[in-house]
Image (tube, rainbow, N blue to C red; front, side):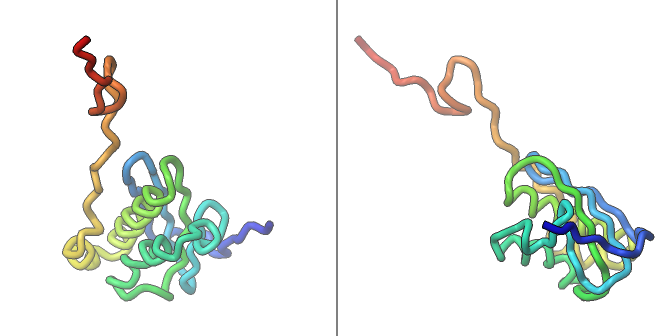
Length: 137
C-alpha cells in the first residue's frame, strides 16, 4: 500500500470546506489533474464513482480539470459529508487562485456551505423527534 505524493510543494491556493460534521483542508498545486485524499488517490478513497464526480464538479465548471494537482486532508463524518466538504474546499481554493472563478462557482451553488446538520437527541425522548410510546393504562 503505497502513499502517493505530489512532487511540487508550492501551494497556489488553499481552502477549507465543511459539510455536516466533515472538514476538508484543500491545497491546490501546479500539476496534471491528480486528486489525493488523505494520502490515497481519490478513486481509491471514495469507492463510489458518484463521489468522484462530486469532487471534479468545481474543476469542470472552471475548466481546470487537468491543470492542477489537489491534495486534500479530510476528517469527520461519513463518505457523503466528506465528499461535499472536499467540493466546498476545492471551490474556495480555486477562488483563492483566481477571483474570476467565484461568479461561476457561486452560480451553480458550490460556494455556499450546506448548513444542514443532524438534529440532536433530546432528553426524555427516544430520538431527536421520536417520543416513547404512550400508554393510557
